[in-house]
Length: 172
Image 1 (spheres, rainbow, N blue to C red):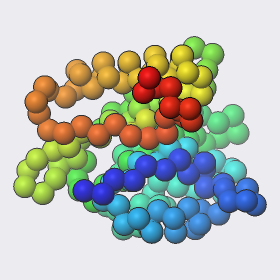
Image 2: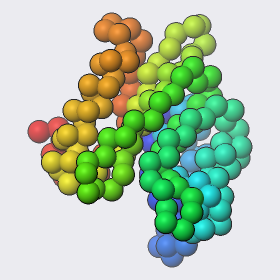
Image 3: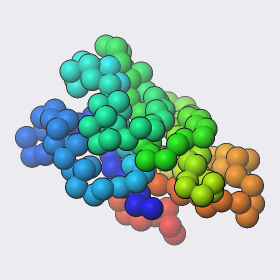
């Protein structure tokens, strides 16, 4: 299983800071992943030409299964959040609000994928906050949520996404 995580920054990037969703899709296609975990994916926002980026990306990359967790509503309409794309069926999905008061909205998108042969894998697609204390609290919340969802000794669990942990302090 090849898993890729990528914060697409609403499809705005490169040195020119322009909205070019095709550029984002080209990057994603290069890795030929089976499961793709995306963060900062727009849904009907003006800044991204009102695209439903999750559906556009899934269609262009040939993914039939996706889960969307919209975490932040925009004042001018639309929203953005996390998206999980899978080559295998998604048996269930939940989006958990892991935001702290007065901080930017953040989410953890849980999915359970049905793999060939009948096994499942639990996937948690996260986008953590910018402050260290915020990330520590969010990781604790995610682990508590997963403990309730995932039986001990059951199928494997993947936690991945944008940790915003540039200095590697979460591991310490």
